[in-house]
Amino acid sequence: MKRGYVMELPELGSATVEMVVDNFIDVFEPSLPGVVERMTPGRLKKPLIAAHGLSMLITMELNGQTKRILMDTSNSPLVLFNNLEALERSVEDIEALFLSHGHPDHYGGLQEVLARRQSPLEVYLHPDCYLPKLLITPRGRVGPWTLEREALERAGARLRENTQPTLIAGGALISGPVEASVSYETPLPGAKRIVNGKEERDDFRDEQVLIMKVKNRGLIVVAACSHPGITNMIRYAQKLTGETKVAAVIGGFHLTAGGEQLIQNTIKGLQELDIGLILAGHCTGFRALASLYAAFPEQFMVSCVGTKVMIS
Ligand SMILES: [Fe+2]
Ligand SMILES: [Fe+2]
Image (cartoon, rainbow, N blue to C red):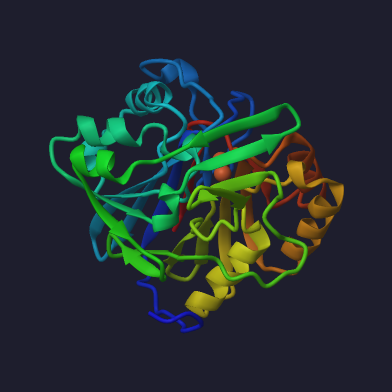
């Protein structure tokens, strides 16, 4: 599919996004009956662990069939497999894995998922995910980290590298590189990658957003780190699908590191869109979460490990 074309997405009967690993857990966060369900830790087989990482289990109902995708694998197999066991989920039940971008807090458990699977697994990712990545932070330089193509293949990955919007598991669209449409969202200068031995600012062409469409409800936009900008990602999802109604936006928005101006501009950008639910977590940042809550008291909820969003 060429960029700018409207793609007819299959209309799902329902879709569920379950946070297997996220940065937060707070047992007192309220649910929203029928839409956002929180785990009751005392009823689980073992404790859930929060970590700086993200992994989401996506379940789609399409024409009476159930399809599951794992989006990202958190920062470590230790956390990922602990939480999968606690939530009584198995990597055998997924039919595809989607890696949102090439940062290690999203691919840390990938090798182990492949190793533990009985059968090979389709892994969707943009080929720039293999470029070494590093970060210049207020506390110094970290990285580089490299995701190795050959190691994934050896472990049983059927690599599906995409640079264009692509339908996966029959029901979800992964966007390919996100087209920018607002000027205030640009990749942060501290994020770097290494190309042909040279360090350069990361343009995050590897980061993709996952988009689903639920019958009579509109889009579910699932972002991971939102380095290309959460407003850009939502607007691109609308452009690709021709659907303006957004039932839910879920994921990490990576806002606090961009400063107060970026937070305020993003809030204005989100206010211009028709969004039913905003569930933010992972790298969004405390200041940004607080500002989002103040700006969207009805729509905003914080994402916790074990939180499940159900749209039907
Ligand atoms: Fe991240
Ligand atoms: Fe990231």
